[in-house]
Image 1 (spheres, one colour):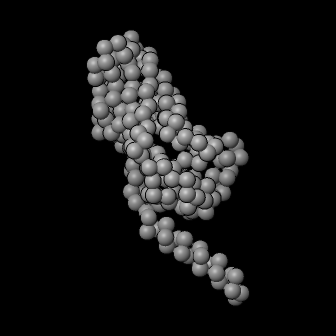
Image 2: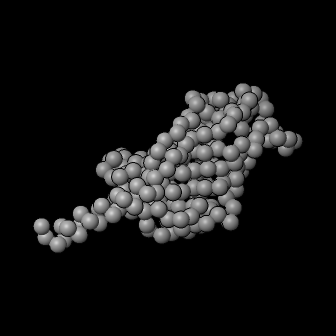
Image 3: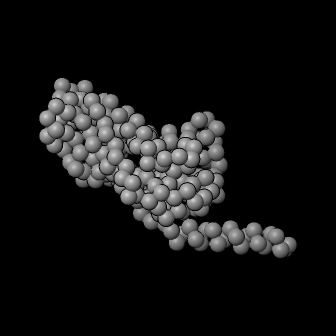
Length: 202
């Protein structure tokens, strides 16, 4: 066997062992749904604290709170806020009640896959976590929360993700869909999206 072939196989083995050591249990979870039947969400405010660490390292598992690659290099806090606002508005769009409600969201983690991991890892996770509080949009009175929500889900990798991208299904689209489903479940306007799974991730 040629040296290059041995090196390639050894490198692949090291990658698998390294990723296996970083495996864990993740979930889409919230403790209790909101009593939202009479709500109509009129405003969504997403805060991404600048105390959250951002990594631009193109490694398999950057050690940071915010890892995001699909938007051009720039203010990752603003990019995450925009993605989350869109997702939460979509998730709340099924509410048609008479009480105007504002949803205040504070992010604690937005750890998507790097392109290196998406291309080469055997699996992965988009780890999305935040706290949400529902308030009467007129008075500011708290209607529900603060509720800590984990909206993590298995990430596509390799050829599966390449095929998804070819049909226009990006990481952003997948994250937006899943967060929207999670919010709809929490609000009671959609199916319960809670799940627990094991995956490579950090």
